[in-house]
Amino acid sequence: MEVQQGREPTDVDFCSIAIDGGLENDILQQRLHTVLKQREQLQHMEIGLRAQEQLHKRGQQIHELERKIEEKERELNAIRLDNEDLSSLSTLAGMGQRRSSKKTKQRAPEL
Image (cartoon, one colour):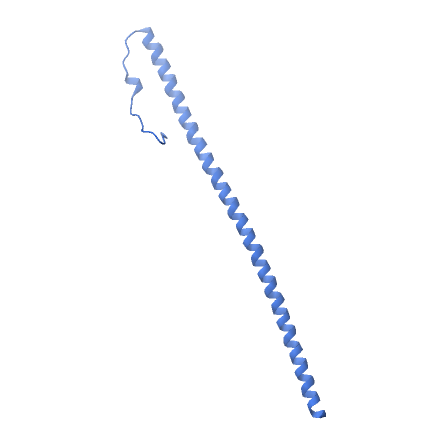
């Protein structure tokens, strides 16, 4: 797999370049082979680094989403507590109204 961003891929087959010169040709061929191997290794390293970078970014996104979820859970819990408080107050207020209406009914015959 070849990764090249921002530049055109080159379709040159370096191994097919013919060089005359015998021993010098062998040395150049070896050097060319070494350079091509290094290039391939660097490309693999680049792919690995890009993958790690993407993983890091996704990890940061996940962390941010988890933080937002925790914040929403706290907000939801606060709303639940408020609702429980309102429900308790409503129940107490209803009980208070029943007591005063009973007292009023009991007092009515005394008049």
